[in-house]
Image (cartoon, rainbow, N blue to C red; front, top):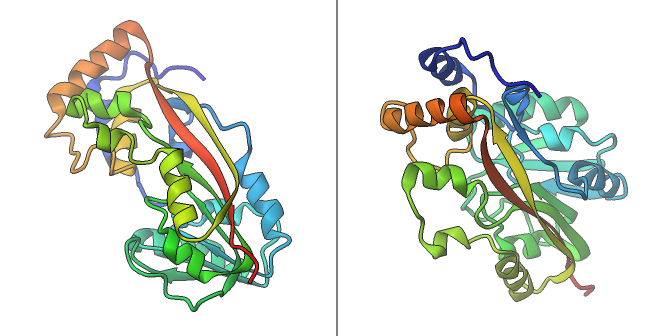
Length: 259
C-alpha cells in the first residue's frame, strides 16, 4: 500500500486522526496508511465453520460485532457480550438483523448466563480471558475457540511513548500463562499456536488513530500530552519511511471435558 502524500502536514494528519470515529473493530480507516500481517490460521473463517455446527454460541467482547457478523451461518441461539456502550449500540444494530442478542456486560464482571448455557464460546482479542467463567458457561464437551493478543504486541509503539516496560506487563499475555489458566479452570487445550506479525505505520495519523482506538496500549493517550513525541515520530517517518512494529497473536482452542 502506498504512503500518504508527503505534502500533508503534521497538523493535518493529526487532526484527521482525532476526528475519526473509534467505535467497533472496523479497521478500514487504516487502508493505505498502515498494514498488519494476518495470522496464517484465518480466525474468522475457522470461527465461522464452528458456528455453523453449534447449537448455542456466545461471542465474548464482540466489539462492534463485525467479526461475528462475518460468519455466513449463526446458531439459532447466538449471544454476544460487550462492555463499551458505543460498541454495544453498534453491535446491536449489526447483529440483531441476524437474530443474535447483544448483552451489555462489563469485561471484568461475571458472565450474566447460567451454567452450561453454550456449546461454543468464541472471542477475538478479548482484553482478558476469564477462564473460570468461560468454563462455567460451557456445556460438557463444549469448546472455547479464540484469537488472543500475545505478549509484547506492538511494544515498539508502546515503548516509543512510555519507555521500557516491566517484564510483568510485557509478558502478561504469554501463551504458557493462557494454557495454565485454562487448565486450572478444568479445560483441556486442543490447539495453541502463536505468531509474530509485522506492522507498518505509514503516517503519524495512523499512529494517533491506533492509540485512540486501542486504548490500553498507552493509557490516557492524548495528542496534547504526547505532541513532542508525535512530532518527532512524524519527522522520522517522513525521512526514513514506515515505523515498523510487530504484533503477536495466538490461536487457542480449549474443550470442557464430558460430564
